[in-house]
Image 1 (spheres, rainbow, N blue to C red):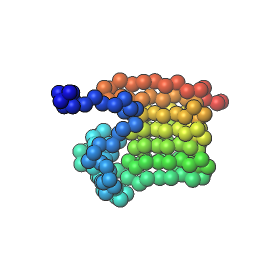
Image 2 (spheres, helix red, strand yellow):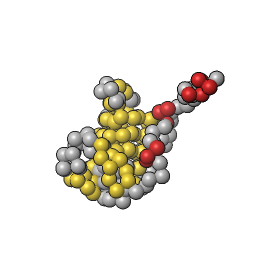
Image 3 (cartoon, rainbow, N blue to C red):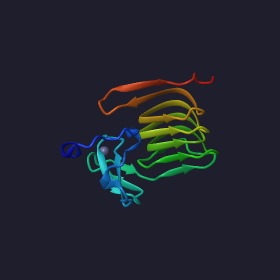
Image 4 (tube, rainbow, N blue to C red):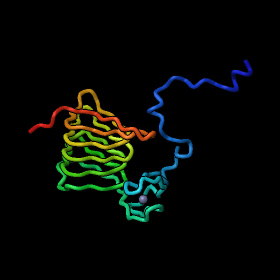
Length: 163
Ligand SMILES: [Zn+2]
């Protein structure tokens, strides 16, 4: 029995939900992002709104954006996270780290970490990301490409785009 305790079995839990590493826990002062231009991971102060990539030296915007109603912007490019709330509307090009859609988005979406479309969310267009979650009642029209760590890509076909 002592031998067994040296090799505890991992409980069967949804490991996909366990993403934070121990050193990230409770440290809100630093966040880790992937540079959308060169793909390298870098750590930046959580409160910073812009920085320069330590690998490719390109300028990066870091702001977190919450879209609460009709957005007049047609292009968002940030290394922060974007939330489109239930009454939020965005159409155009969006690039961010993680994107959470409870409202509507039309266009092209690149999220270097994850995209979540909640049950009230509607997306039409093309998504490229590493982790895609679509609630059962969400509307997803178009297609998505999910890049896995081993370099393979899963193609997700949504409903046909409305004319
Ligand atoms: Zn870079």
